[in-house]
Length: 159
Image (cartoon, rainbow, N blue to C red; front, side):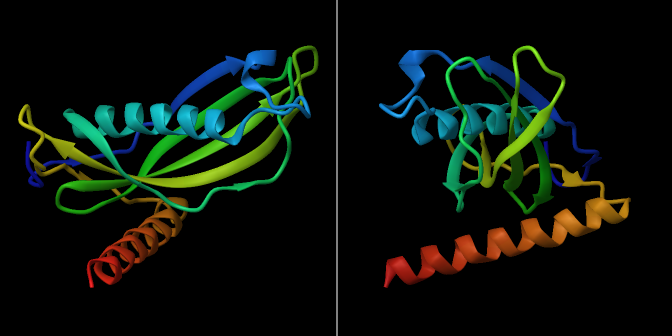
């Protein structure tokens, strides 16, 4: 594919009804289940953007703000906010939607790093992200910061 092309980010969303098997003894969803849905939705956004298969390279800090309970509907939204040569930072937001009410509550946000790969699993270039609006610019800077922190952490762990 290559960095010669420029693409706009596309938002991908995914919803799931929370069942008792998804929850802990407090009746709230397991954090790991939320991370799984964030990873899957983030991967779909990364694959659609890159036009290639992707793998998860890193899941950055995720802070859970509100509990999600049995019977809630979780809506997960993801979009690419930053691109490097072979990698992308994807912002993933999770909301809970009441099953009978129109209200939507923000529950958590995470930034995930994905790498585009070929059939042999080797990293390959991704298109550049088209950054136009002030919101695009804001999230580009956040994505760049996430990517830099990830690089710094990996470098320090190698020593």
